[in-house]
Image (cartoon, rainbow, N blue to C red; front, side, top):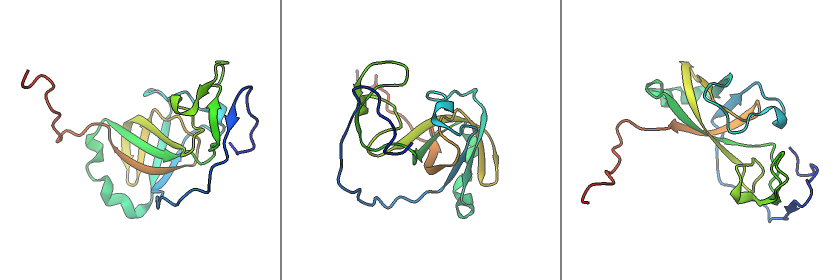
Length: 159
């Protein structure tokens, strides 16, 4: 979606200074059946269609052991999103809310996150279910949704 996309009633924008380079490196692309924003399911579903997370070949060793995880968290850049909305009217709601109170892709730094189910690994490709982004979305990072080697503190300890 471009900056000049039509606003819904009551939505407001801001003109921000030029972005500083965060030195992010896209590590791959996400392939989904969703070609337009209206096609994307809201917040995905773990039984949704199979999608492909395609990493650049140089990163193949970084995937070693990923297939031990049932669920993976993906971070991606919503490259077709507006970046100037302060208030938004969520699709179909008629309400007006502040951008930071929504999971809308339209935000100053359009970073998307999804927890997806890993179906299988094919070299540098992860086949997953649960995505809600457009085909060709740039991938920023991925990690297991839970680490089996990291212990969580017992909230009842010392009580």
